[in-house]
Length: 36
Image (cartoon, rainbow, N blue to C red; front, side, top):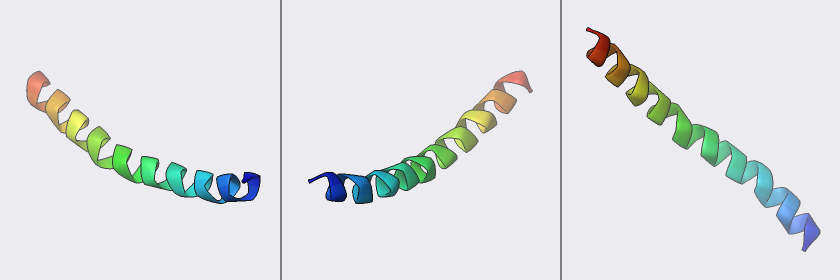
């Protein structure tokens, strides 16, 4: 059980970073639009 958990943790982290990147980009674009 612990082995499977360790193998899935990095995958979940990578998926999280990939999902956060576009969200941060959209948030930055929205902030620029509001400031402009």
